[in-house]
Image 1 (cartoon, rainbow, N blue to C red):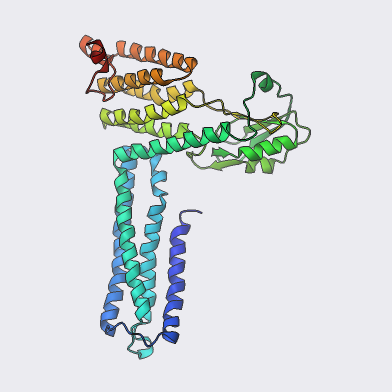
Image 2: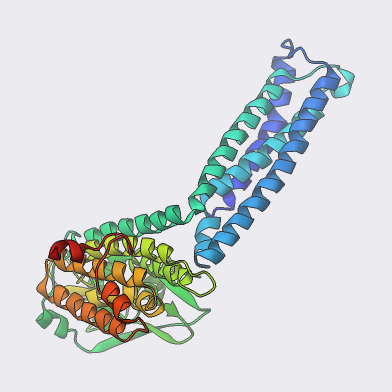
Length: 421
């Protein structure tokens, strides 16, 4: 459901209740009385309606200013994520519904000169005001998550969810087995090529089950030419079908590939890493000059890399229940994840002792935990690259000596000096 449907649902419910409840009360419950005079009830309902609209304007003006300011400070790609938070839309719906329902109830006070105040309809207004205040408190708590520490943890949590779910789903899928190199080479001739035509769109996810079923139906293999997170433009080759007995319907193939205006977290572990790196290099810019935020970002990146380092990243080959290769799609290698995480931070943070020490500590920590010797060799090469960058930096001899130590706090506690003491 689109987020904007949430306040529309609240408003529709308020309109229906405002039309129905006072009429039901007048017909069947007219003997009950709230004990308020007509003027008092009108003042109460008028204050509820006008005050709720004023509160809505003030709260949401402040909310969007805070979101915009935080997005500028962290990353512009976080704006859409924050503004699509459903708490924001539930709060907007609750505030607006209270305003609308209070107006409908106000219309039934002293209806046709009856000098009566509807009891239950008025009580519902009070209940809705209480609910609105609870939503207001929840919204303020949510806006508190825009603090830098909370933002980093939120992005890191999204990355952990994607990593745990994606690799368990793809590598542990029933009927999906590891495919040998020999099987990958036996793709056969290209029998069908599917291109994308339309406005630029990013690939959000692949429906693996649907693509495997389509390939199995044609007794062929689908090879995706683009990866999740890639942007498709006019004429981009989306996929090729190899050695198929029949042509697959392009409509069904496109339905199995979800497209969007922007990248999403789903099936894309690179995206949370990209956001974290954006926050780090923004903090390292001369305009902000906040290396401590970059160090906090490396904390999250290191955790994600530890999880990726122990995962089976070769998830881009899926076979059917009979063991026949049916789907091939590009997936990042361990080196891709490592360079994405650290390259830009290393370049923009080369003049910060705090950043280089924390990055070196993260790389040494990865060496101690990686189960694969090949991945450990990649980290060793990157560690040497980092050391070369430090040697070529404008640091003097003493600063260079300090930068070559690893420190999980950046500047706080040198593990190397403790080990050698």
